[in-house]
Image (cartoon, rainbow, N blue to C red):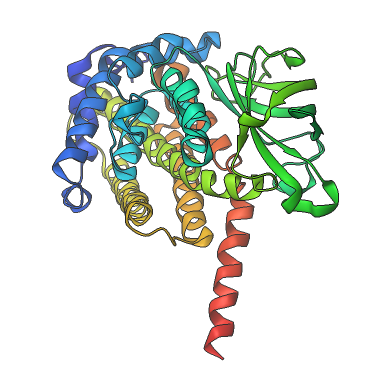
Length: 407
């Protein structure tokens, strides 16, 4: 088996041709013409601008600034945002298929890409028109980087135990505390910071604020060394008496939990799409490598294993698209339904990459083939945006409630 970099990494036509092998009519029939056009456009941009840099970005831990700028130039960073703010006013399904394409080309780029949306969406959803006009256009055109400041050293999945405090002042709040594992935290220009105004109220005491990354008192840590997603920086962010005006509040005081919950719907679509995209990437890279070695007629053992992966990828894609469609059409989509999508699709990404390395045998862990990168990148998708254990808890609670209603 050749260990030279695959043609799909450097040849846009080869990349598009190989990725089209996993376009299943069973899933495509549920996409609108516009959503299929978004997928085609995103795949072309990824083939030209993103995938060719993926190996180098991973190997050198290089922040994918050029990739994000390319996606922004093509109006892909604002898919679910209104045109007045620089977006294209597309559906969540269009966003999901675009995220899938970017993840298949370079997962680290997709993580930065989705974090831009995660920072902009709470401002759109709960901020004032002035805040939206001030911050969102820069996040969509790539001139600003954003971060979501939730996780703390002692508060991960249980956001109600946040230690970062927002102390009222005459004209706003003073924020002090520490955030950790913050995507793009080392360079964030815009930070959505969740802090408690009244710890005795638990979740009802949390508020959300927009904070400028260069405001006095904001400190940015050095990026952590990580298993995967090497191009996406993850760092601590510190707040030392950071003054924010009343106008920077998102929603009402004490409404931070609801701001967070409305935001995770979008973020979990992102993570689920990453899972499907990474599974696709592992599948296509394995197929390409085997074909270079055996030709188009593969041994039965490989054909059978790849057939199983193809079926699982189709199942994940159908789940991703159907739940994203629910979000577009049904405001009452439940945490359990969102959790089922996030857990299943991100588990798919990791397990597909593990299986792909097994199929490739001794070549499976060679970096030039890119499958081991899929495996490393996929692992964290099971952890962030609510661990998959938390998703199973949400799903289980929903099932328990449904059983009680049957009595």
